[in-house]
Every structure is written in C-alpha cells, then in structure tokens.
Length: 197
Image (tube, rainbow, N blue to C red):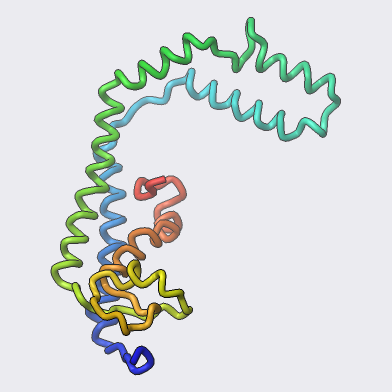
C-alpha cells in the first residue's frame, strides 16, 4: 500500500509552502523582536582585555611548536605567573565573579526576555499547525529510513501501513524548526538571536 500513496499537489501548495514560509517569517520576526528588547550594555573594557589575552594565549599554545622552547616558556610564564600573570585569577576572586553574575538582575531579565521571545512564537506556531494541518501526510523524504523513525516523522498520523519516508505536517514543523538554523545564519548572519546554541 505504501507504493500506491500519491501526494496531492494541493498539499504542497496549501500545507508545505505556507508552513515553511511562516516558519521563516517567524524566525526573522523573532530575530528583530529579540534585537529590540535586548538591553544595550556598554562593553566592559576589562572583559574585552581579558578576552583578548585568552585569544593571545590560545594562539601561543597552538603555535608552540613554531617558536623556540625558551621563548614559549617565558611567554607562558607571562600569562600564568601566580604573582602578576595576565591570566592568573585567585580562586576567591573567581567565585566572587560567579556570585556577582547571579546577583545581577539585568542578566536574569535578559535571559527571561530571550526565552519568552523563543517560547511564545513557537507555542503559537505549533498550535496553529496542530489546528489547521493535523493529520496531513505532507511530504515524502527522498531517502529510505528504518521503521524506528516512524514515531518521529509520522507524528499525528495513525496509519501503520504508510512507508516511513512519508512525513506528517506536525513533523514537517519540527524539521523546519530545527533545520532552518543554517538558513537563518545565511540571511541574518552568524551571530543571530534565532540561534539557540
């Protein structure tokens, strides 16, 4: 029976395309909304200097085989000396910095804003997909899969005789949700707010 299943072109026009377009538009909208609600903070010069020092130390470590060992040791001591090393931080100060990070209410507020800008659109989009497109066999994946993928790809379809390579509209939503990350990095840049990682 799986060989006899023919997908209607109206499904492509009224399910696949609108669902994909809406997912892209919501991702772009979410990017700009999160950019608007993000609090603007002036960069801390101390943090920038520390970051640059870490990059310099990483470059030194990766190029250690290219310089004489005496030069490498002297530069390593410059970074890690316990008295005045550039990267040396006493344990007490490191713990204080972590405690200060958790006490900063602006950081917690920024995290909550970012989470809300991710959760609310995804919840509404999933409800929209469930309401309008539930039960559709939306597409066929061009490569064969094992039956273990059936519950993931045919979510919302209660037919066990359908081939595993057919995808439901609910599963197409999840494939778009996780698969558009590369597309968003192309159109919005590498460091975009839609990237959850």
